[in-house]
Length: 286
Image 1 (tube, rainbow, N blue to C red):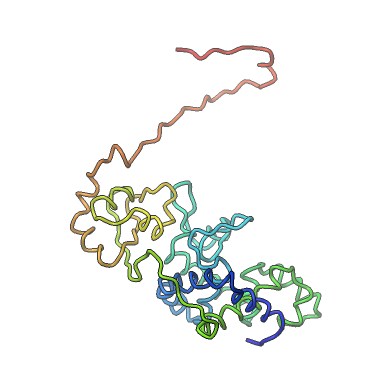
Image 2: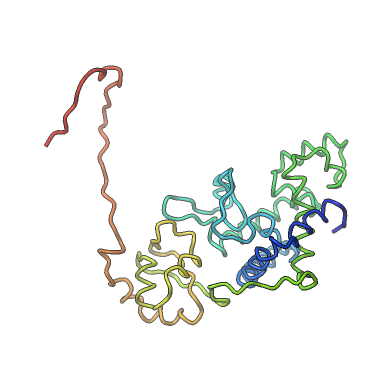
Protein backbone atom coordinates (compact mmCIF):
# COMPACT_ATOMS: atom_id res chain seq x y z
CA UNK A 1 0.00 0.00 0.00
CA UNK A 2 2.15 2.88 -1.23
CA UNK A 3 1.79 6.40 0.10
CA UNK A 4 1.54 9.27 -2.37
CA UNK A 5 -0.28 12.56 -2.96
CA UNK A 6 -3.43 10.79 -4.19
CA UNK A 7 -3.61 8.84 -0.92
CA UNK A 8 -2.94 11.96 1.16
CA UNK A 9 -5.85 13.73 -0.53
CA UNK A 10 -8.25 11.13 0.88
CA UNK A 11 -6.60 11.19 4.30
CA UNK A 12 -7.13 14.96 4.32
CA UNK A 13 -10.81 14.45 3.46
CA UNK A 14 -11.30 11.96 6.28
CA UNK A 15 -9.51 14.13 8.85
CA UNK A 16 -11.04 17.50 7.98
CA UNK A 17 -12.82 18.93 11.03
CA UNK A 18 -16.24 18.82 9.39
CA UNK A 19 -15.72 15.17 8.39
CA UNK A 20 -14.43 13.73 11.67
CA UNK A 21 -17.95 13.12 12.92
CA UNK A 22 -18.85 11.17 9.77
CA UNK A 23 -15.72 9.07 10.06
CA UNK A 24 -16.61 8.37 13.68
CA UNK A 25 -19.97 7.02 12.50
CA UNK A 26 -18.17 4.76 10.01
CA UNK A 27 -16.02 3.43 12.86
CA UNK A 28 -19.17 2.73 14.85
CA UNK A 29 -20.76 0.87 11.95
CA UNK A 30 -17.55 -1.10 11.34
CA UNK A 31 -17.65 -2.36 14.93
CA UNK A 32 -21.09 -3.83 14.19
CA UNK A 33 -20.48 -5.19 10.67
CA UNK A 34 -16.86 -6.35 10.82
CA UNK A 35 -17.50 -9.89 12.10
CA UNK A 36 -19.81 -10.80 9.20
CA UNK A 37 -17.49 -9.17 6.65
CA UNK A 38 -14.37 -10.93 7.94
CA UNK A 39 -16.18 -14.28 8.07
CA UNK A 40 -17.14 -13.93 4.39
CA UNK A 41 -13.58 -12.98 3.39
CA UNK A 42 -12.02 -15.83 5.36
CA UNK A 43 -14.44 -18.34 3.82
CA UNK A 44 -12.94 -17.50 0.39
CA UNK A 45 -9.36 -17.23 1.65
CA UNK A 46 -9.10 -13.50 0.93
CA UNK A 47 -6.95 -10.84 2.67
CA UNK A 48 -8.75 -9.34 5.65
CA UNK A 49 -7.62 -5.85 4.58
CA UNK A 50 -10.48 -6.05 2.08
CA UNK A 51 -12.88 -5.50 4.98
CA UNK A 52 -12.32 -1.79 4.45
CA UNK A 53 -13.49 -1.76 0.83
CA UNK A 54 -17.09 -0.93 1.90
CA UNK A 55 -15.72 2.24 3.52
CA UNK A 56 -14.88 3.41 0.01
CA UNK A 57 -17.92 1.90 -1.70
CA UNK A 58 -20.76 2.90 0.63
CA UNK A 59 -19.34 4.61 3.73
CA UNK A 60 -20.45 1.38 5.45
CA UNK A 61 -24.14 2.21 4.95
CA UNK A 62 -26.30 -0.87 4.38
CA UNK A 63 -29.01 1.15 2.62
CA UNK A 64 -26.69 3.24 0.42
CA UNK A 65 -27.76 3.72 -3.22
CA UNK A 66 -25.60 5.58 -5.74
CA UNK A 67 -26.70 7.53 -8.82
CA UNK A 68 -26.22 4.45 -11.05
CA UNK A 69 -28.57 2.40 -8.84
CA UNK A 70 -25.89 0.28 -7.15
CA UNK A 71 -27.03 -0.53 -3.62
CA UNK A 72 -25.96 -1.88 -0.28
CA UNK A 73 -22.74 -2.11 1.69
CA UNK A 74 -20.84 -3.50 -1.32
CA UNK A 75 -22.64 -1.39 -3.97
CA UNK A 76 -23.90 -4.12 -6.29
CA UNK A 77 -25.80 -3.23 -9.44
CA UNK A 78 -28.89 -5.36 -10.05
CA UNK A 79 -27.16 -7.23 -12.88
CA UNK A 80 -24.06 -8.05 -10.84
CA UNK A 81 -26.14 -8.94 -7.79
CA UNK A 82 -28.23 -11.46 -9.70
CA UNK A 83 -25.11 -12.91 -11.34
CA UNK A 84 -23.80 -13.54 -7.81
CA UNK A 85 -27.04 -15.23 -6.74
CA UNK A 86 -28.60 -12.34 -4.82
CA UNK A 87 -32.34 -11.78 -4.98
CA UNK A 88 -33.63 -8.36 -6.02
CA UNK A 89 -37.41 -7.93 -6.16
CA UNK A 90 -39.97 -5.33 -5.12
CA UNK A 91 -40.10 -6.94 -1.65
CA UNK A 92 -36.57 -8.27 -1.06
CA UNK A 93 -33.24 -6.68 -1.97
CA UNK A 94 -30.43 -8.93 -0.79
CA UNK A 95 -27.87 -6.34 -1.84
CA UNK A 96 -28.76 -4.79 1.51
CA UNK A 97 -28.40 -8.07 3.43
CA UNK A 98 -25.16 -7.87 5.44
CA UNK A 99 -24.33 -11.58 5.40
CA UNK A 100 -25.48 -12.50 1.89
CA UNK A 101 -24.02 -9.42 0.20
CA UNK A 102 -20.68 -9.89 1.98
CA UNK A 103 -20.49 -13.50 0.82
CA UNK A 104 -21.37 -12.45 -2.73
CA UNK A 105 -18.72 -9.70 -2.67
CA UNK A 106 -16.09 -12.15 -1.44
CA UNK A 107 -16.94 -14.57 -4.26
CA UNK A 108 -16.73 -11.79 -6.84
CA UNK A 109 -13.41 -10.51 -5.49
CA UNK A 110 -12.00 -14.03 -5.65
CA UNK A 111 -13.16 -14.40 -9.28
CA UNK A 112 -11.54 -11.09 -10.23
CA UNK A 113 -8.28 -11.97 -8.50
CA UNK A 114 -8.20 -15.31 -10.33
CA UNK A 115 -8.39 -13.37 -13.61
CA UNK A 116 -5.98 -10.55 -12.76
CA UNK A 117 -3.54 -11.98 -10.19
CA UNK A 118 -3.03 -8.64 -8.44
CA UNK A 119 -5.02 -7.17 -5.55
CA UNK A 120 -4.86 -3.53 -6.60
CA UNK A 121 -6.11 -4.46 -10.07
CA UNK A 122 -8.77 -6.67 -8.47
CA UNK A 123 -10.12 -3.81 -6.36
CA UNK A 124 -10.07 -1.49 -9.37
CA UNK A 125 -11.93 -4.13 -11.41
CA UNK A 126 -14.48 -4.47 -8.62
CA UNK A 127 -15.19 -0.79 -9.14
CA UNK A 128 -14.99 -0.57 -12.93
CA UNK A 129 -15.35 -4.12 -14.26
CA UNK A 130 -12.95 -6.44 -16.07
CA UNK A 131 -13.47 -4.86 -19.53
CA UNK A 132 -12.34 -1.48 -18.19
CA UNK A 133 -9.18 -3.01 -16.74
CA UNK A 134 -8.46 -4.97 -19.93
CA UNK A 135 -8.65 -1.79 -22.03
CA UNK A 136 -6.31 0.05 -19.65
CA UNK A 137 -3.80 -2.84 -19.68
CA UNK A 138 -3.84 -2.85 -23.47
CA UNK A 139 -3.32 0.93 -23.66
CA UNK A 140 -0.44 0.67 -21.16
CA UNK A 141 1.34 -1.82 -23.39
CA UNK A 142 0.40 -4.86 -21.34
CA UNK A 143 1.52 -3.49 -17.97
CA UNK A 144 -0.24 -4.98 -14.96
CA UNK A 145 0.78 -2.40 -12.38
CA UNK A 146 -2.07 -0.19 -11.16
CA UNK A 147 0.03 2.96 -11.03
CA UNK A 148 1.15 2.44 -14.64
CA UNK A 149 -2.49 1.97 -15.63
CA UNK A 150 -3.52 5.03 -13.60
CA UNK A 151 -3.59 7.54 -16.53
CA UNK A 152 -5.68 5.18 -18.66
CA UNK A 153 -8.47 4.56 -16.15
CA UNK A 154 -11.75 6.49 -15.65
CA UNK A 155 -11.54 8.91 -12.73
CA UNK A 156 -13.80 6.89 -10.40
CA UNK A 157 -11.79 3.70 -11.01
CA UNK A 158 -8.49 5.58 -10.76
CA UNK A 159 -9.57 6.97 -7.40
CA UNK A 160 -10.58 3.72 -5.72
CA UNK A 161 -7.07 2.46 -4.81
CA UNK A 162 -5.87 5.71 -3.16
CA UNK A 163 -9.20 5.86 -1.31
CA UNK A 164 -8.84 2.21 -0.22
CA UNK A 165 -5.28 2.76 1.05
CA UNK A 166 -6.41 5.86 2.94
CA UNK A 167 -9.34 3.92 4.46
CA UNK A 168 -7.00 1.18 5.70
CA UNK A 169 -4.70 3.80 7.19
CA UNK A 170 -7.50 5.77 8.86
CA UNK A 171 -9.25 2.71 10.26
CA UNK A 172 -5.97 1.84 12.00
CA UNK A 173 -4.68 5.27 13.10
CA UNK A 174 -7.89 7.24 13.71
CA UNK A 175 -6.86 7.89 17.33
CA UNK A 176 -3.91 9.95 16.10
CA UNK A 177 -6.43 12.38 14.61
CA UNK A 178 -8.63 12.56 17.73
CA UNK A 179 -11.47 10.67 16.08
CA UNK A 180 -13.55 8.29 18.21
CA UNK A 181 -16.10 5.65 17.13
CA UNK A 182 -19.64 7.00 17.40
CA UNK A 183 -22.12 5.26 19.66
CA UNK A 184 -24.92 4.12 17.34
CA UNK A 185 -28.48 3.13 18.35
CA UNK A 186 -27.78 -0.44 17.25
CA UNK A 187 -26.84 -3.60 19.16
CA UNK A 188 -23.18 -4.53 18.74
CA UNK A 189 -24.14 -8.21 18.92
CA UNK A 190 -26.83 -9.68 16.70
CA UNK A 191 -27.76 -13.00 15.12
CA UNK A 192 -30.11 -14.37 12.48
CA UNK A 193 -33.14 -16.58 12.85
CA UNK A 194 -35.17 -18.28 10.15
CA UNK A 195 -38.78 -17.21 9.76
CA UNK A 196 -41.32 -20.02 9.34
CA UNK A 197 -44.31 -17.84 8.39
CA UNK A 198 -44.58 -14.55 6.55
CA UNK A 199 -44.50 -11.73 9.07
CA UNK A 200 -43.97 -8.01 9.37
CA UNK A 201 -41.19 -6.23 11.20
CA UNK A 202 -43.89 -4.29 13.04
CA UNK A 203 -45.27 -7.52 14.50
CA UNK A 204 -41.81 -8.55 15.72
CA UNK A 205 -41.21 -5.11 17.21
CA UNK A 206 -44.46 -5.15 19.17
CA UNK A 207 -44.32 -8.70 20.53
CA UNK A 208 -40.58 -8.94 21.20
CA UNK A 209 -40.28 -5.34 22.43
CA UNK A 210 -37.65 -4.23 19.95
CA UNK A 211 -37.67 -0.67 18.53
CA UNK A 212 -39.04 -0.83 14.99
CA UNK A 213 -36.29 1.50 13.73
CA UNK A 214 -33.70 -0.96 15.07
CA UNK A 215 -35.32 -3.83 13.17
CA UNK A 216 -35.49 -1.80 9.97
CA UNK A 217 -31.82 -0.85 10.28
CA UNK A 218 -30.78 -4.45 10.93
CA UNK A 219 -32.93 -5.74 8.05
CA UNK A 220 -32.85 -3.13 5.25
CA UNK A 221 -33.22 -5.88 2.61
CA UNK A 222 -36.97 -6.07 3.30
CA UNK A 223 -38.19 -3.09 1.32
CA UNK A 224 -41.81 -3.21 2.48
CA UNK A 225 -41.03 -4.33 6.03
CA UNK A 226 -42.35 -7.83 5.24
CA UNK A 227 -40.23 -10.95 5.83
CA UNK A 228 -41.36 -13.79 3.53
CA UNK A 229 -41.65 -17.36 4.79
CA UNK A 230 -38.30 -19.16 4.89
CA UNK A 231 -36.17 -16.01 4.95
CA UNK A 232 -33.85 -14.92 7.74
CA UNK A 233 -34.31 -12.11 10.21
CA UNK A 234 -31.49 -10.24 11.96
CA UNK A 235 -32.21 -9.61 15.64
CA UNK A 236 -30.36 -8.19 18.64
CA UNK A 237 -28.63 -11.15 20.26
CA UNK A 238 -30.56 -10.78 23.51
CA UNK A 239 -33.86 -11.02 21.61
CA UNK A 240 -33.15 -14.16 19.57
CA UNK A 241 -34.52 -16.61 22.16
CA UNK A 242 -37.47 -14.30 22.81
CA UNK A 243 -38.44 -14.47 19.14
CA UNK A 244 -37.94 -18.24 18.94
CA UNK A 245 -40.19 -18.77 21.93
CA UNK A 246 -42.90 -16.38 20.72
CA UNK A 247 -42.83 -16.77 16.93
CA UNK A 248 -46.39 -18.11 16.79
CA UNK A 249 -47.57 -15.17 18.86
CA UNK A 250 -45.74 -12.80 16.51
CA UNK A 251 -47.47 -14.39 13.53
CA UNK A 252 -50.93 -13.91 15.10
CA UNK A 253 -50.38 -10.34 16.28
CA UNK A 254 -52.62 -7.89 14.34
CA UNK A 255 -52.08 -9.47 10.89
CA UNK A 256 -54.84 -7.31 9.38
CA UNK A 257 -52.84 -4.20 10.32
CA UNK A 258 -49.33 -5.30 9.37
CA UNK A 259 -49.79 -7.86 6.59
CA UNK A 260 -51.78 -5.90 4.02
CA UNK A 261 -52.80 -7.94 0.98
CA UNK A 262 -52.33 -6.67 -2.56
CA UNK A 263 -55.24 -6.90 -4.96
CA UNK A 264 -54.55 -8.40 -8.35
CA UNK A 265 -55.89 -6.50 -11.32
CA UNK A 266 -56.73 -8.49 -14.45
CA UNK A 267 -55.17 -7.14 -17.63
CA UNK A 268 -57.29 -7.45 -20.80
CA UNK A 269 -55.86 -9.96 -23.24
CA UNK A 270 -56.78 -7.79 -26.24
CA UNK A 271 -55.89 -4.12 -26.20
CA UNK A 272 -57.27 -1.85 -28.90
CA UNK A 273 -54.78 0.43 -30.60
CA UNK A 274 -54.67 3.85 -28.85
CA UNK A 275 -55.12 5.56 -32.25
CA UNK A 276 -58.68 4.18 -32.48
CA UNK A 277 -59.66 5.82 -29.21
CA UNK A 278 -58.89 9.41 -30.11
CA UNK A 279 -61.76 11.79 -29.48
CA UNK A 280 -63.86 9.24 -27.59
CA UNK A 281 -65.06 9.51 -24.02
CA UNK A 282 -65.16 6.37 -21.91
CA UNK A 283 -67.14 5.82 -18.76
CA UNK A 284 -66.34 3.26 -16.12
CA UNK A 285 -68.85 0.40 -16.13
CA UNK A 286 -70.61 -0.23 -12.84
